[in-house]
Amino acid sequence: MTAVSLFPSELWLEIFEWATFYPDAYATSYKPFCSTALSEAQPTCRDTAISCSLALVCRLWHALVIEFLYRDVRIGYGQSTLKGALCDEQGYGKFVRRAVLPFQYTSTPTWNPAPLPSVEILKLCNRLEVLIRPRSPPLSTVSQQFQFDAESLPLPSLKRLEWNYNLDAEHSGGINSLGATLQNAPNLQYLSIGSVPRVPMIDFRKVSLPFLETLALSSLSGQLMHQISYRWDLPSLSHIVLGAVTVPDISCLWDTYGAQIKSLELGRHASFLVRDVITPTLNNCPHLEELNYHIFFTLPPMLHESHESIHTVGLHSAPNLMFPSDDTWILLERHFEILEYLTSLHTVRLFGDWSQIVADPRFATIFVKLREHGCQVVV
Image (cartoon, rainbow, N blue to C red; front, side, top):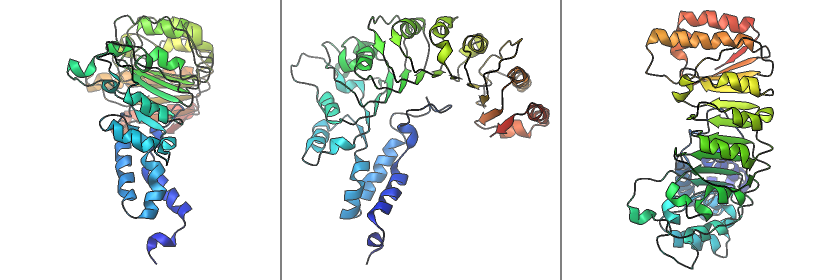
């Protein structure tokens, strides 16, 4: 009797799930400093490779691991083979939870009445929860022409969408248009928008996403802010991640959504050193409970009165090479000083590498003040 047959199938399934599942790739809820850290290919490609290796061990393992093998697909070369596997009598399409669809595989260089193969593949994934439109690599113009309309399709099961703008593709509509895709995905809970262009993006469509809780933006431009504030209806929005800001004032965003926002995260970008984003956020988001930002890339807020809603602050220690060592400590101390204005603060979470900062004798004074304030420091 082999070791494989000694264990029940249910136990092997648990082991395979543990070995091949990367939860952040499928997450639909907000986690601090995770919105921009995950690439469209890694580490899920590694997990797929593990699934392939497990499937080759024996027939039993192949049967057990097949759902993990098709859980994550990348639509690219070999589309006919993938389509055949998803639509055969085994119905592997029902296993697909996450799909990566590069824009070059939804290009429309010529008119063709037949549906795009990549779109046909998506139609077979009737339980798709996560769709990634990755940043377009520098390719020849032949492989990325969008001259004709792209097909649109309903995505009722989609919960997470990671979208990187491709302006050329946007004009072809359908699956290449963010607005059209959002209209076809009414059950979205998590939306990440990357590669936001600075040129005007004119889209007059109304978008209603009643279940969207997290909105992550690589950059907040004026045009995008106007769309989100005045053309989108997001009644459940409670978590916002801003990778950068290119507008001097984001008050219209808070005018629309400030009363419902519970957490704000600021990215690792020098634009947050140019303008104070935190102070107007605290003044216009009365129910804000959590604030996360990169301490060396963010201007300390100018607080003159207490704020009672914040109970958790997350600080990331990513270094900023623009500052010499002494200026770094001045900035750090100023950030910790303003925490005393957050009267309900009970947790300070430290992200990144804080080993050198914590080992510095100057941090001992900061730590003592936090403890006197009743704050728990979590590393």
